[in-house]
Image (tube, rainbow, N blue to C red; front, side):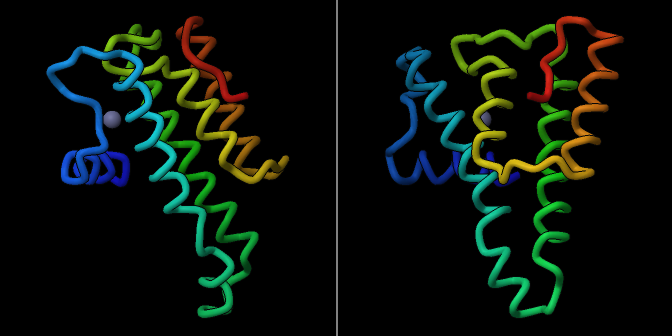
Length: 132
Ligand SMILES: [Zn+2]
């Protein structure tokens, strides 16, 4: 939903790809921009949220990153057999890699669950993207 919200903002701000231009590079940049917006929206402000609510910041981060991992997993499922770059979208793997680069590196349970989910998917669909 946050990804789609950023597309709408791009349209209103005039910063998105021209839908009539058929410009793959611009289309891909907009997709990466929308993925980054959604990821940052979920991860920024965790410290302030922890102070406000008394919640453990690392648990909040873990929960949100797990949600992001499974959002990426849903994209991989929905894009079955269309994981490569197209004119309108970058490859699913490059989108996963870009989002993962925005996340706090960790070896926690959320990352382990994402690795397990993607590894299981690749046993069924060998060409599916992987969790780096
Ligand atoms: Zn999009």
